[in-house]
Image 1 (cartoon, chains in turn yellow, cyan):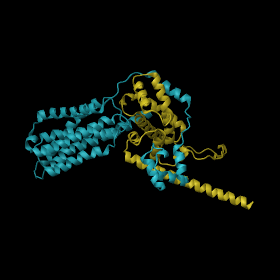
Image 2 (cartoon, chains in turn brown, red):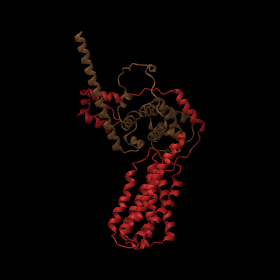
Image 3 (cartoon, chains in turn orange, red):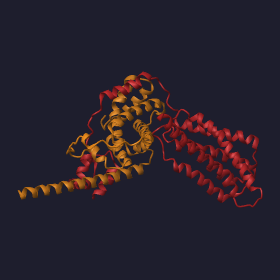
Image 4 (spheres, helix red, strand yellow):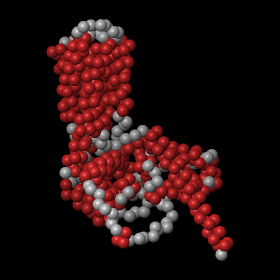
Length: 198
Length: 264
C-alpha cells in the first residue's frame, strides 16, 4: 500500500470485514500487511520474528475486530494492536530467554567469514540508529501516511510528544548523516593521498 | 533558516512535501547537503517485498473463521451506561444508609463537591469507553490524578479540623463503606465494558477502580455527616485511592498472568 492510500477505502474495507466479507478481508490483509511487516521488522530487528509477530497480530486483529468503531480511523486501531502484540512478544521472549542457558559459542572454524557488504544507507539502516520510540514515530509518520494525531492515538501518547520524538529523530538522523559524510570525505582524502603517493 | 528549524517544520507537518514549504526552507534545503540527504532518505518509498506465502498463511488462518460481528457501542452510549450504573449503586446504597450527610452540609458544600464528583465521573466514564477500543486512548495518568487532587483541594477549602476521640473508628467505618460500594460497582462496570479490548490493562484497571471509588465517595458525601477535613480525606477519598490502586494491581496481575499462560 502506498502512502497515498485512501482512508475512506480502508474504513470501507474494515466495515465489510466486520460484516464477514471475504473479498474485503483479503484486500485489507493485502493492503495492510506489508506496512505492518516493515514496522515490525524495524521494531524487533529480525525478519523471521517480525513474520511470526505479523501472524499473531492478524489473529489478534481478527479476535477483536468488533472493537473498531465505525467512523474511527482504521490505521491507528491496527497499529495500536500491532504494538501491543509486539510488546507482548518482546516480554514473552524475554521470559523465555531468562530460563534458557547460554551455550559455549561455536568454534571459530565453523564460522563463515563474510565481508561486510558496502551499500549506501537506506531508510531501514538509518532508522536502526534511533531509539525504538523515535524509530516507531518516524516510520508511522513517513510510511503509513498517518497524521500526527493518528500516530498519537496509535502509540497512546500526545501530539506534542509525537512531534518531540520526530524532531529529536530528525536531529539524530541528520547528525548521523553528517558523520557518514565526514567519514566519506576523510576516506576520499585518504584515497587521494594514496594516489598522490603512487 | 537553520537545520533545526527545518527539523521543526518536518515534525510539525509530517505529510507536507518540500513543495509546500516556505521559500526560506527551500533555500536552506538547496544549500545544506545533510538536510537534502535527510529529506531524500525520509521520502524514499519502501520496497514492496512482502512474501506471498506469508499472505496466504494469514488469509488461511483468518478466512475460515470469518463471521459477522457487531461493533462496540458508541463512546457516548457506554459513557451514559457507566454513569447510570454508578448512579444505581449510589441510590441502592443510600436507601439503607440514609441522607444524613446531605442534610449536614450547606448548599455551597453540596454544589461544589457533587459538581467535582459528577464532572470527574463523566470524564472517567468517557475515558473508559474509549480505552476499550485500541488506538483511541488518551494518556491515563492525568485522568487518574486530577479528580483526586481536585477533591482533596475542595475538601481542604470547605472543611476544618475538629478533634474527636472516635474519629479513627468513624474514618475506618466510612472507608469500609466506600470500598464496599466500589466493589459492588466494579462487576456492573465489567458487564458494560466486557466486549472491549484494552491494550493498557494497568491504566484501565486504575481508571475503573477510580470510577468505582468515586461512586463510593458519592455515597459517603450523601450519607456521612462528619464534616472534618482529615476524616473526609482519609476515610472518603482514601477509599477511592484504595480502589484505584487495587484496580491497577489487578490489571497488572491480569496482564502478567495472560503472558504467562500464553507462554505455556
